[in-house]
Length: 415
Length: 143
Image 1 (tube, each protein chain N blue to C red):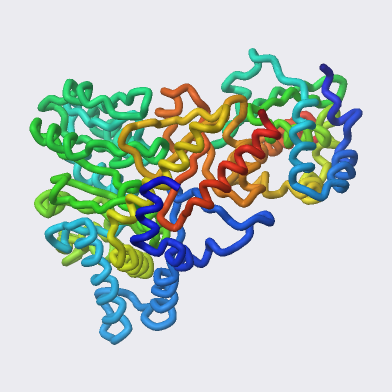
Image 2 (cartoon, one colour):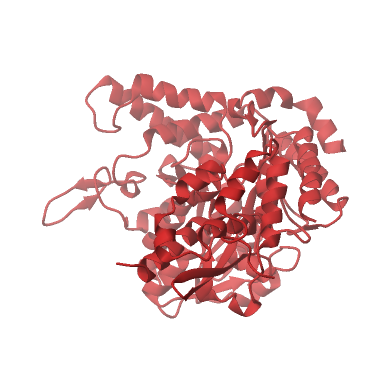
């Protein structure tokens, strides 16, 4: 056991945290489940499951419009969840928190409502080479629609952004920079504060894809000074189908909605329709009420812990896994950035990731294999994909040991 | 190396062999071994137009129609998928189109307990390959 694990086990009772997640207590293919696919989606604590059950059993009703008690209760819980999120990212106002279906929809909203009406064929959008497809394709679509150019920050062999190349790319033509806070495929933590400051110096706006960051450390949008920040509920121990877009109020005020419908309007007539105020003007249709309430419960669950302690514990697990990987013949790590969190991406020489994933699954170990929706960075490393073990605070040392015992068994089949 | 699947190794041979194994280890060693008996296709055939893209592994397929019989060159970059391809070939390779169309592949996969490998979400290209072979059989078969 390394120091980080030893120290944190004393501070927080991680064995009891694990019991908060009922799904972890089961056998898969005859073995106790080891869930190491947390970067794809996290498991849900009992309190989140209970909040969904409570909502549907007691309070289900449409929000903001009913003249009855259930609607009042649903509305109060739904809006309280928004305030939970506001505090969670340290936003100044609840109006800056927009509910979406997830990070993908948040990025598309900014691409269509902020970038599309403002950009021309003289303008530039910058993303990085390690982005998830959901932080590439929405910008490619805007470029197609406006004639703007998409430029890409290069990534070095360790999986770190080349910041001096980024500096050289900056000019007054750059209107939008959108980068991931943490890479889903490599685990690299990107220096977004530095990127935001540099982009602002040339007048560009910055969007941060925080899908892989929010589950691992505290987010402070005021300190970062980002213009937009997105994350997904299901990667943050909450339900699927709910996500968040934070935007600076002045920017959100200046943007036109790209989806129309109920809820987002003020007055509708066939002559002229006026839009509702923030945040509702971006929330057309009946929202994912249960999802928002469940996400609020997930944040409340996290708030009971010192998140720095959780992060140190997770870093300890990653460190332990990295040590074991380095001590195992034939393993090649993909993504060795100095600053990493949550993700061990690797290959076993002479094997295909898909084979390894299948044989790990037979031993009750859940990992992700493939290109992780980040084909450009896989192409840069000239690999078909990786095996990705991703950690959360409910994982433990035994999970890491089971993973490597299972890997050694897989090697007897394939190497 | 000639392709033994569909001739010396039939689909019923595979169903029978697999029925003897109790452990996942034996089953997967067998599947990987079947893959090793499948001749690798020529690198020059691994082109994009023969590629059936999956999100986790890739499959290449080249069909031949000769003397009323369909045969196939198939390959994958993953060992277990090669084994699964060998199983599919035991049912489809060197068969008249009508026989391919008549073969109940879903029951076969059920019998060998490989249905989960064929769910669309696995993204290994196998389901798409089976669909493509059926389409080829249909367009070459009696209408």
